[in-house]
Amino acid sequence: MRISARTDYAVRAMAELARSPERPRKAEDVAGAQDIPVRFLFVVLSELRQARLVRSERGPEGGYMLARPPAEITLADVIRAMDGPLVSVRDLKLTGLEYPGAAAPLPDVWRAVRTSLRQVLEGTTLADLASGELPDLVRERARAYDDDPRTYPSR
Image (cartoon, rainbow, N blue to C red; front, side, top):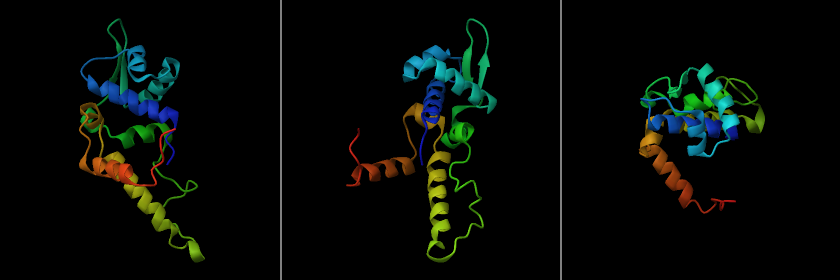
């Protein structure tokens, strides 16, 4: 799975909004807190507003707020708003997907990938990010990544 800069910025901005869900935050403040280019953030926030994940309030005390409580918005919701389905194979439905010959088992691999992503992304909310308390499954998978000798050093 490739996570685009746009999606990364969207999730980070939403996590920042989740830290203070009771009051609007200026886009400039969110951008500064997360080191996101403010002009890019306005585009991202517009898409999140269209997806009804954030709302905006006008006026001197206005800004952006989550449209629902942080515990009700998953990372999957944000990613789908920005990029569409979590996993797609050439835009085909995975249900009923079949390949001939040696590739016959491959649709099961694609379905397993999708299920794994959904478990992590649908099981992690903005409240989890804002509190720093990630679900056990996420912590276990992150630990497995860190322990994997094939893990590449950061660039």
